[in-house]
Amino acid sequence: MELKLISYDKNNLKSIDLGDNVIIDRDRLTMIAGPCSVESREQILRTAEYLKSLDIKIMRGGAFKPRSSPYSFQGLGFEGLKYLREAGDKYNIKIVSEIIDPRDVEKAYDYVDIFQIGSRNMQNYSLIREIGKVDKPVLLKRGMNATISEWLMSAEYIALEGNDDIILCERGIRTFENYTRNTLDLAGVAVAKELSRLPVIVDPSHGTGRRELIEPMSRAAITLADGLMIEMHENPDKAISDGFQSLNFTQMKELVTRIRKLHDLLAK
Ligand code: PEP
Ligand code: MN
Image (cartoon, rainbow, N blue to C red; front, side, top):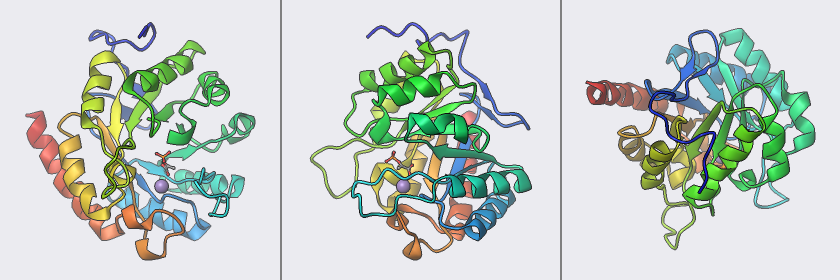
């Protein structure tokens, strides 16, 4: 594996400055939360307000949803991005959202603070090359069938186009195990940190597919990862997508309190 641009360099670890004192790097714990899908303007405004009260500075929400079935909800598209931007501006919270088509990158530019490349698109080379030309950070999720090398190589593709503001996100891989939706590969996180200079975060929602496993895997993850991305919904049982792996607002508050305490202990 030839990593020229993102290879580990202890004197040059990547620090991504999003402005307003929001920095993603290996020196702090980054928390990202929000619904799987953007469902309505009111939902997004309420979510942003709540996250703000928890001092969570980055909100997620999918406007373009790459669903396994073409009959499932595909997202609100640009309308959804507009709601995210409005909420982001109103509550001073950064926005991360997935883009699935290279033709949308330019149009989406003003709406997001971080572009998300989803698991299904990690090896969509025309898309990741396009994202590499942009001067905004990229959250690169690991392909569910991708090896660690393939994941890092995709990051290398992005960096090669000029954009090395990349956050790697481990979100579980497919294995024979089917009690969990995916198998969260924490060894992959350790390897990604050893081989690259990028921050690496973990998504325990997609990584397990089970709400009750979000907290235990978050605890395990922050011993080595630089942050967490967690799905949260005001009423998970009514969520249009991925409610079964989403926390409600109160559960999120409890998790964040405990995770921050643990992180402080680990940092000592
Ligand atoms: C998501 O973050 O909502 C998502 C679709 O994740 P993944 O690409 O990891 O499946
Ligand atoms: Mn989801």
